[in-house]
Image 1 (cartoon, rainbow, N blue to C red):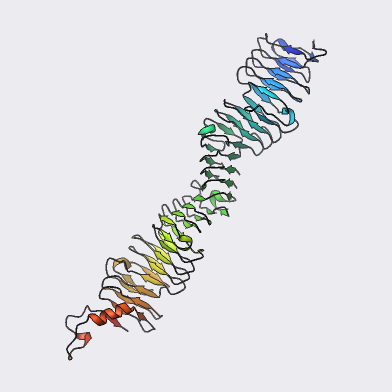
Image 2 (cartoon, rainbow, N blue to C red; image 1 turned 180 degrees about the vertical axis):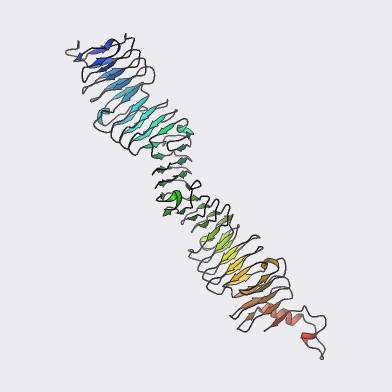
Amino acid sequence: MLNGGNGIDTAGYAESTAGVTVNLSTGAASGGEADGDTLTSIENLTGSGQNDVLTGDAGANVLSGGSGADILAGLGAADVLNGGFSADTVTYAASAAAVSVNLLTNVNTGGDAEGDSLISIENLIGSNFDDILFGHAGANVLTGGNGDDALQGGVGADVLDGGAGIDRVSYTTSSVAVVVTVNGAASGGDAEGDVLSGIENLTGSTNSDTLTGDAGANLLSGGDGNDILRGLAGADTLAGGNGSDTADYSTSAAAVNVTVNGAASGGDAAGDVLSGIESLIGSAFNDTLIGDAAANVQTGGDGNDTLRGGAGADIIAGGNGTDLADYSTAAAAVAVTVNGTGTSGDAAGDVLGGIENLTGSAFNDALIGDAGVNTLTGGDGNDSLRGGGGADSLAGGAGADTANYSTSAAAITVTVNGAASGGDAAGDVLSGIESLVGSAFNDTLTGDAAANTLTGGDGDDTLRGVPAPTRWSAATVQTWRTTLPPLPPSMSRSTAPGRAATPRATR
């Protein structure tokens, strides 16, 4: 029996050749030289050179582990917990309230940690409540236990175990960007070499981080920097913070429908909540990605995607598949070239790549395709649609719309909302079109029963209005009137020798 009596008394087991387990709260002891000891009125303990377990009581204790990997529990009051050599652990598992413990600053508060001073401690075990555990520059093992804990390992290859509850790992103090997957790989900055388990949420550094969740519900907070957040499955919260941040759905097993900082559904996006996000990356399926009034980057990836940048100078990258840049919600007319640039309305400053199709606004748009197969949809308004090369679909929609072939490198033969052949018109399908503009070659333009405007342009053109109030371009009419040579009185214009190719307007 060891009875300290009055004063501040210490029981020492430095000479023990085996580890000891001593508890000042119960007075019990076992192992090595402590085996069978009973302690009374003892305030402090010194362990052996082995792996000891030293537990204090409700008073102020000094627990010194010595050599070996020791476990120290001060319990109540302001304790001094000195691990000594090796990898030592302080545990607050018995605390009746949450603790906040910082191995770097040695500022410790809450529950049994209130006022504690930790020396040569590498590892921490939290309480059953919502703890905050900070490591230091070495390799730490931080175990949250029950409760919704926040763990920050700092520099060093740390083991971060959240335990039960909704737990978070934070890298806010990292001086370099981190790449971290919830309960998976970690690299870069303070995350280098870290091993995570029982973690649901991540907070990045002030640099450009990549944070990846798992199949559960995750909260990924990018902080400052241009971060990439990938929530994966589950109803995730993706908070980009400052910088130009991206929500990445490239690994989703189904199509997603996502609005920047708005609604999200489908695939990995189902139930997600986005904030502070500027850019979106879609899946390998048919996604719908919608931007906001800021400058966004929309990347469709594989699949036939619909990309709507909204206002702001956006980058709209369709990727593989047949992709659509959609300006249907623009508040003003747009002028857009497939895989080119945009001007006016929501298209102002936009740069498009990997796009095959365009949808215009409710105003007077100018939509231009490329050498591929394009679908240009004007919507409302008096739109100008120029498909370029390829078998294009030109859908004017409501309003007085024009199919424009002025840049064709060969003559065209086109009927309003009918057959199309030659030059850029080869294979085209027209609908909702009222007017035609020809090329610089010898075109044949034919209207329909509606009021049409047929503009031949350069070349010896044939314009057929069909019975209706059809108009020919004044320039075209003037051309064929002034270029015909005078004919002898015995000849008519329709039978003049050698003039079969002369432009003529027929009704």
